[in-house]
Length: 301
Image (cartoon, rainbow, N blue to C red):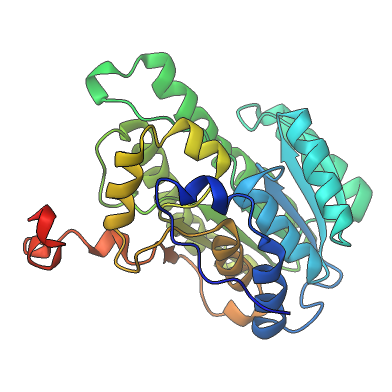
């Protein structure tokens, strides 16, 4: 089986890259990186698990033996995601939930425990985002993103963490951030604030719950090829060009790149890692130095 070359996202390649065979990348890397069935007997809950990064994470963990529960408030996403997981040979279940509703989260946890006997892994991936200048962002827009990203991550972590503590066998929580959570970025006042809050939550819970053998970490993606993000965030070829140029490795990531990182942090291979953030962005967040322009293409100087 040959592995396709890394996707180099350009304005015209971004659409084509969405249709490339992603399973090759995932299958080969999982075989190389992890022992088969490393999550055997465990149950993983992935919010925002019907599409994109969430689905890639669910598929990766499921292929390594975990029973996977994907959650989303979009039933169509759940139906398609569950079908993809079953096709990949995973044991999976889909649960509709709005992560802004603590009662709905408690019901999701109860349903998962009833079906599979417990929860061992939580991936906080549910998110909402759009680009907006701070002065133009409405209170409703602010609250929508804070509610899903920050409040939702806490509500899920609290509900699942309480269950993990009661089970007495430890566990792992991984939250999906963004590489601007600690740097800020224009147009992301709502998302950056929410993600920074999740980062602080991650570090705090890592200390509080270490005594229960619950590890809490995060992954911070950079620009990732995604059909939804391509439509909602990258509004022109020029935007895509500038984002690509900001990545030292010269390409956009794929959902499977993030899935690999989450799988590692959730696995026993990371048993001595907690309270940390694994940045998966091709070096983008580092490419902000005073003299970076000296190394830019001549036409950009």
